[in-house]
Image 1 (tube, rainbow, N blue to C red):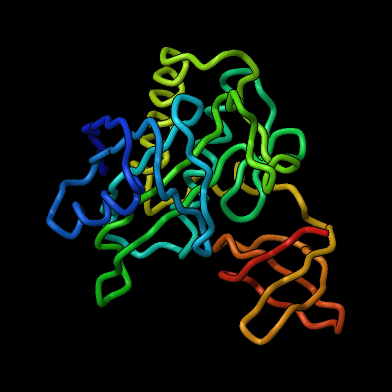
Image 2 (tube, helix red, strand yellow):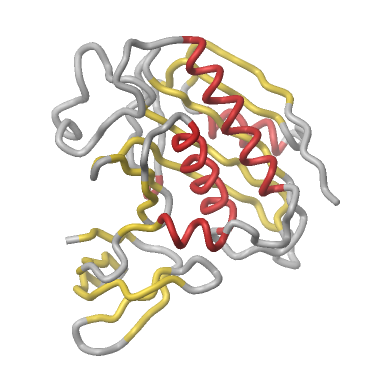
Length: 244
């Protein structure tokens, strides 16, 4: 049975926790290295999107994993999503997962996940950096105009270092629980049960253009199954999906 031991490092400000931990991974940093930042100056999400990372109100953490076994492309992303879902629920707050990597509370985004991996020649994972950004509290000045209508926070009370520490501790425990069971994907049913948007209309951005369809399910590799308006179906393992 695999075991995961954490070594947590905390910094005040960093350009990006993922960028920093990726560099450390290439230099041979051990599995279980965790970097937590109070703020990021260039926080990143999927598809090179900016992740708003102000000081005091968020949790920005990257975890170095070395699973060294073949896994579906989105397995670690979905593992982190389930861990986040369970952590938020532990504090009594209902939340859902939006495929593939976002956490929503009352229809608004509260957290996102960015996993960046290096593969061995046989397809196994040499290293994976699991980056998690959570809006724990509302910024004093509010969210930027670009996301003010779509973003929310986990907690409605004032920022608290103690609450942030409690949240991080619970999150790391949840990730450890599922990670130590790999390559068994024990979190698949939890992911599917908490997934929102199945049966909804979607707009899929592909390399050759935009296509409308309907999301109809999830396969065992965590790919979103979409039936396009022309009747064809596809299992998406990449691309940008907007629920409309």
